[in-house]
Amino acid sequence: MMNDEYYMRLAIEEAKKAEQIGEVPIGAVIVKDGEVIARAHNLRETEQRAIAHAEILAIDEACKRLGSWRLEETTLYVTLEPCAMCAGAIVLSRVKKVVFGASDPKGGCAGTLMNLLQEDRFNHQTEVVSGVLKEECGQMLSEFFQKLRTKKKQQKQKHENIRGNPN
Image (cartoon, rainbow, N blue to C red):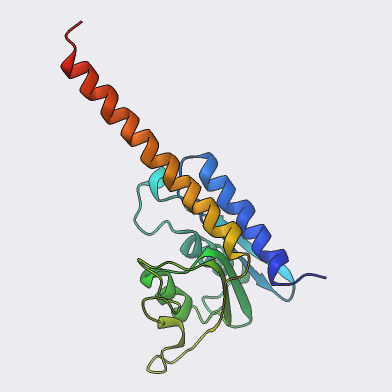
């Protein structure tokens, strides 16, 4: 049976693709009638585009695949809670439901900092399910940023050693 965990695992596969190329490991898939119609992962560093978030790329792919900007009967699965930009795109594209893994205390706009997906002043609200495979999604992000901090610290120490040692 294909349920939220099944599709979240597909989003995690996308996140791992991002990590393999040095991107923040965030992945997204969009499902309609039980079929995956789009999948994407972060490409912000690769493409040097601020909007190359997994959700935006998946929404764009889904719109092309369906031939419509309206994604009314779709569910978006994403490993990290959508940011303000992605939440806006989700609302504007009329995604019916969003399922996310890890909450984002610094930028989450699907319930953590604010909830743009269920703001009744907009003409569309999106059903939200949070915390699906949150430990796995959160661990992947935590490990990525820990490795990044360690790498930066080592580079800084190496640079300081070179400056301090003329040999």
